Length: 285
Length: 325
Image 1 (cartoon, each protein chain N blue to C red):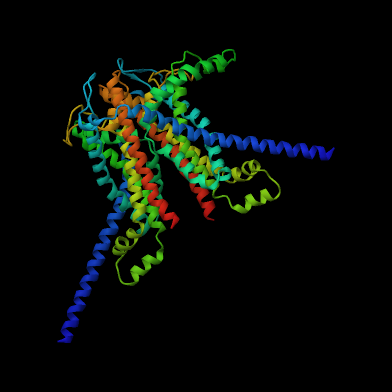
Image 2: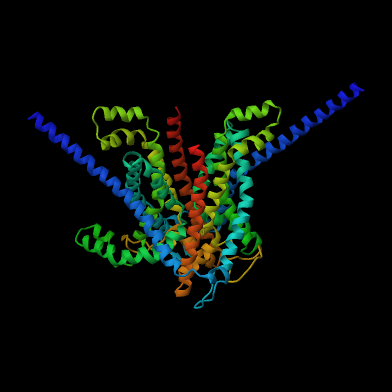
């Protein structure tokens, strides 16, 4: 009787275990299948519209063929400005947190606030920049869009810079100090050099993050149907153009939206895989 | 001669040391200033949102939170419908994403063959890297038509005769709507929940798991009775982080929610969320009160996500301290 009860309990536990483990495998399958479905649809619909005109012509009026040149240009310009502004600020803040104020109260507070900024809704950043830049200037501008993107760059760079500098062994810094180098030279020539690939990874990840951001550009850089290199005027960008074209009833526009989506996704995935390979090699070493 | 030279080199050294001290102070303060700038950005966000929404908040008062009406013509605005849509879509998304996310984490830590671990982990994290507008365009053109023709009619037929559930899944099947948004949000927060759950699972001391296996526990029992209780706070932190993302997600939802300012019991009906309302209407808003009401919606979203994210970070900090101890 007890033996029978024990065997049935044993087999019940085994069955339950295999059932739950099967569900876990199914969950992993769902995750991977979803990624495959999205990428598959993107490649299928996006490739159909890839041709030279996409990269050489302006966004067309409804019902016409055209390209995405001005949108691609706008995205590149705003991303470059945002990274040029956001990276120094982020690297310096990360430097303070890991080098000068590793144990200070300020660092704890900044780390907490930075983590919140990291996951704060980007549309809120858009509203902030609207109030800060667009409203006082009186009009939408590419500059405002770049500022919004820069604010998204900062927390990513701060986080990775701090983490990477914390990984640099203290003996390296002590060796630098021992030969009489002042602190900032130790940081610049020893700590930065040791943490370089990690910091670059952070910058690449931040580029990957902002190159697909739409919400903060909607009411800062707005959009522009034509070629514009004026930073003080509205400028087209790839994500906002996709948003406008995808929701339009015109077939040519929808096709361009898919092609643009494919371009953005390939850029973002390429950047994040490249960034990962930089740090991946570090771990193996 | 030698004495003069030594005095000269002493002076040179002194000057160099002083220059070093000065440049170090400059570098130190620049770094500190950059760190403080991070704080200023967040406080700037808070101040500008309060300032921008002041007009709407002083006109409508607390009733802004409880009014359903959203009428640009009569300039009568209330936030209830967007708040309802935001909370419902995020909650449903979390309900779907949490079991799948934990399942994937268990798969990756316990079941997956070692060589496949890193590629599959990276693949799931790539889901997090895909920009939200891609989810939006995919949701609108691929996922919504699929739901409209298969899943939604099935759900409507399935729950037709069950009270309560028949109003939650009331037709007609539009394709777009709150359920579609919730499903897409679930896919989007999945990687966050998975990667954090996986990380906190790794903090469980092996000796605890080995003891459990040693007394004959099955893998599931070890996960359920040892690993999950040990990491509960961390998992909650990951879930909160996912929730924070879901609440603020804009573009993907804007594409598929339908942008209808009303509260309906049915998950299949179109609705709206705070972020979708702002994205759709901000550039077209004419009149200061309209703009101000939209900024007020932004303020509500900011406060909501700030609280959730702060809670998430606090929980994750607790488990980090536990792992460090």
